[in-house]
Amino acid sequence: MKKPDAEPVVARNRKAAHDYHLGESWEAGIVLQGPEVKALRAGRASLVGGFAQVEDRELWLHGVHIPQYSQARWFNGGSRRKRKLLLHRAQIDKIERKINEGSLTIVPLTLYFKDGRAKVEIALARGKKTWDKRHALAEREATREVERAVNRRLKGRSD
Image (cartoon, rainbow, N blue to C red; front, side):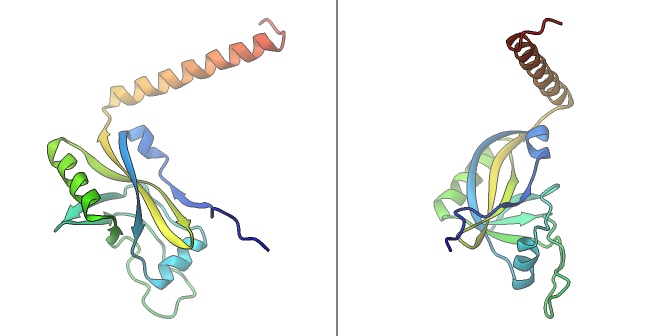
């Protein structure tokens, strides 16, 4: 029996696109301990409120909630502890330069498994102001309304 090509996404940060202007993104490995991997495979994690920081030329993920695995016998560490992200040195240096240039932050977008290893997609992001969020919502609603009108027109209805 053939294994599926891609395992499903464990967690997705849907609020990130609403709260931030997203820029360049990277796929990073994440250092986990045994019970955390089991909890992720059970599909339990939350990226809301998570962010990454460069500390001593290493990238660390903060505020990501991976709950304790109830059947673990040993080391069920903190559910919101900081976790090391694995990227190439050149990528970390590039991220650090971009963060120091402007008011950017690093946010996690998705957490998933790839070839049996836990991966997290991170992106450089700039925070949106309240009016930006309202403008984006209004734009999205206008686009939906246009699509509805076109669909009605194509179906032959005239309301």
